[in-house]
Length: 305
Image (cartoon, rainbow, N blue to C red; front, side):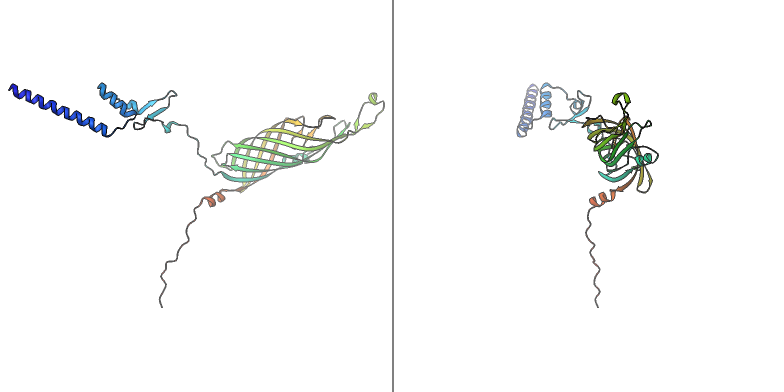
């Protein structure tokens, strides 16, 4: 019996040795080393258990959930927790508009002594960003109440460049609430005539005329406005604008009272009322992205006579 137990123990020891040798040989045949295998080997030697959840799911220093790729050892941020940018509901080239500002001619008809007419062209991108170009004509003929001088500025052109931002860009494009910025500039002339100076200055009462002056003035505008559809492709819109002069040339005989496109120097607030015609570009986008289909082939068998 004692010999049988000894023989059985020797057989078991030999079996364990062969099993260990087989495992060692298999590892040498497949020498894959990465973060997971190194951790696994280290834990096998130390006879520790592996907590797989700590290798797969954890948080970084910023509190983001990250996942560890157990094959490559790389960290991957959970994409479902990243901020999602709102999808643009409208195509890049959504529409184009042209407009005419009726505020100046209407106010001129009611007695304002300056202004004339303005036009605008807009390109609507994603119904969100609206680059705008404005051009117009302005003039002034001002007689103060005391009639002690006359201010005149002949018809001059002005330009404005800028853009608007539609707050409701993913809503109905027929209704807009927007804010924008403009840079305006104008080359123009102005003069003051029939200036009556006090007698104690010139020792006589006679009018004085200042020569015509040329000026180049630049200014900026911050605006807010609305635009609504009234019939088919026709819309109307209002803007309220805060503006300030940025630069101005030629101040030899003072500063001009009126600036085309800007208005009177003494006011920092202006307004516009415009009528727009909008040309939709959705059809153009659909035609451009629509795949061309092959022409139909007539496979009707020919009749035999």
